[in-house]
Image (tube, rainbow, N blue to C red; front, top):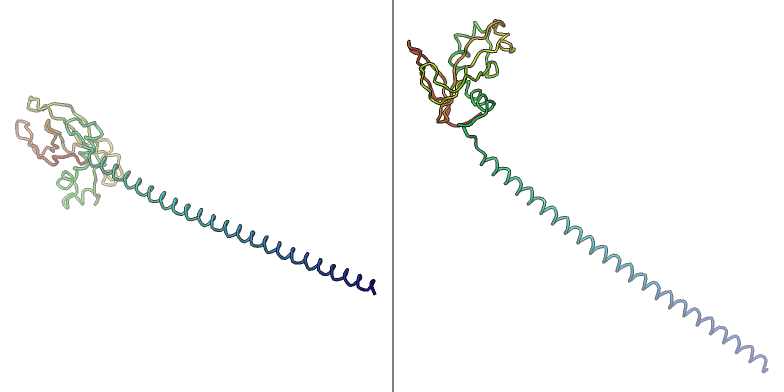
Length: 209
């Protein structure tokens, strides 16, 4: 009888031990799961915070870049608008560009007219069909110095337009005279009297080359 009781007690104690182990394992598992969940949630919150900061940084950088570009554009525009040409101290290239820009006044009167269309084979000439030759600082013809810069303009018979018009390649006809006065005004010679004194027409008072 005593042996049976002893055996029964051992079984109860063994069962209780097993239950205790199971409870410990369950509790430990829950603790680990909660810790893991907390870590995951913390990582997610950190990642979200970093993403928000990155987005904010990108927005700030984009805004700064846009502002910088706008300021640069403003500086370029201001620089361009403030840049001027001293018409009393032009280089040869600048003087020629100025004359070319206003050559239309000569072409419309002496070249690209209905009367000349037939003899020119219907060709319409432009400023690049001519040579612009520097002729010095002097009044020249009247013998009085006027501090003007003089250019003679001659037909360039090597251009496609001149060839199409049938221009003689062995000649180079005078087209007109230009001068830039000491006051920085561009003029074209329109006529000459019997004494060789020219009449000059002002065609530009500000540089537009």
